Length: 123
Image (cartoon, rainbow, N blue to C red; front, side):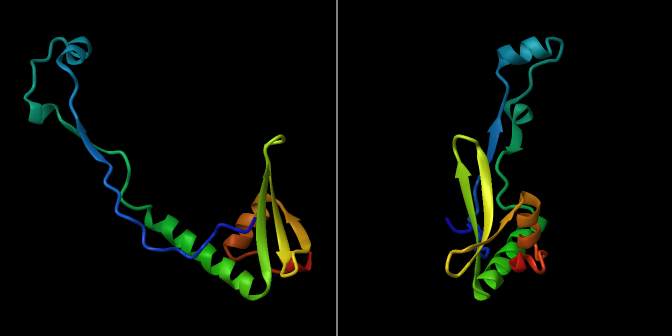
């Protein structure tokens, strides 16, 4: 299995905003002394699914994608595998022939994705 980190692409604009109003029975239980509201007063706008990730997350994804491409250009690849029985994920740095050069800790994998890991290929 190869790394799933890819250069960022344009993200779709997801519409996740919904309006909800509490039922009169629920409103009566929660606030019995407050007079009924009009429907427009009772509506609540909830942005349940943001239309895009925060800008700092997008920047991190772009950095990881660029670093992934730089590794590939040098003939390296990061492989992730998951053992369902032990529920452990293994991360390995491999060369172009598929030879495992180093088993990475999760912290090393993140460091490598963010541009660190200098000399990582040396083992």
